[in-house]
Length: 349
Image 1 (cartoon, rainbow, N blue to C red):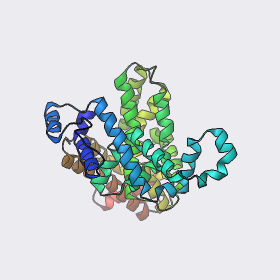
Image 2: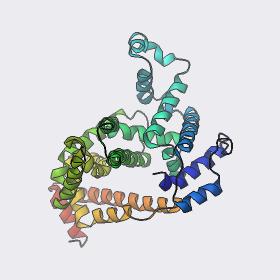
Image 3: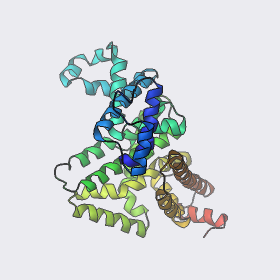
């Protein structure tokens, strides 16, 4: 993916230079002119160069987190500290961990490492630039997304195939599928922040996501199910176990899960009813087609990338608003009927 991310890497290096952390020349990193040459040649950064950026991105993010209240939030700090120390230490001295003199530094370092290791050195910097958000807000949204999607288990299931799966392109497709779900969900939580302890919100959204994932085959159209089944079959032919292949094939639809769970909370309807209404509206209004077309749009520059993402966000928000209004306008109707009535009221077919 390095050639596709050259603008993001350039932005990151410029940001690190502005912070006074990075000297490109001393680290043998390409200058702005060299980056332009690589863009024209369709080349990316090399692994040693990426390794340097990973280290600096972690250092910068750790410093930013230390200047925020995030290391003091118990729902983040406590699991990190318990996971950092050996089990025997935790068993005997758990009551003392909160008083560790380097508690904030440990939490900030562990959390920063986790974000960069999981989604790359530019994930936070891209959202900071695009959304003018604070780094800590992006990290907080990522942590909620990671827990709400069960991402750790998803990554581990894919990584367990690393040695057995000979097709490297297939392996990376599985990894990027999880990355895309976490990234999209983090964007949602950045736009819909939770203040204070996010434990209950994470639990509610994770329960809803798991129900949606299990029922996805019954919620979607025959065309969608056929396409997902074909992807599942391709992965199985490449040696991917059926459960991992099926999860990957259905995973892209879970980008809608945060909106569906939230609309269920607002309307008091079951999340599966909300999903039925949302996907009925999506099929009738060709939202699925629009989303696919947006994904195919060229986005070479940062402005193009932001424009494409803005359209994608608008499509997700449109489905959310339409679904919520349809269910509120027909509170006692079955979800498909509520969607049909909403379309009829608006002159749709």
